[in-house]
Length: 223
Image 1 (cartoon, one colour):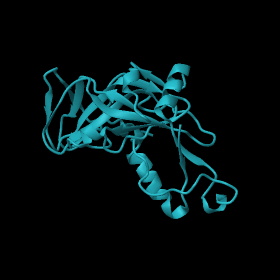
Image 2 (cartoon, rainbow, N blue to C red):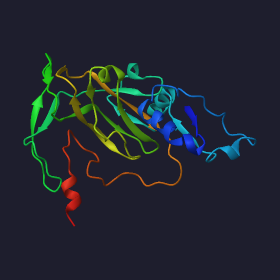
Image 3 (spheres, rainbow, N blue to C red):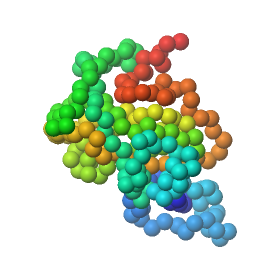
């Protein structure tokens, strides 16, 4: 388990940003030592931010604390697991979307020879893997290799809820035209511990999904 000591108040935001967007990298700056009786007063609390190591993720998969199906042990990283791209995409049928209305989509199949994505267009994909956990907060990020090709795998929805069970819908867009292929390692999932009492995500709009899900935000306006 990778342990991240909390920083003094002036540095907390920067530390969280680094942990959030660079899960596979160590902090660039020097961190205070873990809390002791002598330095505890200089920290915001005696809690820790914890990201599970790859070995800890594997232990939880074997014990049932984390579910990733299908699972390939070769895809475990030092503190994440690579997930793969399913062979289907959804695109919205119109250019102007409406939060209050159901926005209809068309389905695209990614052939083995690849599919060319175009800039300035949103493609909804999904992972081949179904994941769930009642113990940790799942987080999704792109891989550096895809990022260096200018391919984004989510817009703002990389944060999961403890208790979420389903496939991950990917909000994909690219900086320049890029050819993508089915079953490629497209992103990585990692896990945070959670502090305090909590309710499991159970009745959400996207729980136990069976495929790609477009936005269901229009349901939020129904009273």
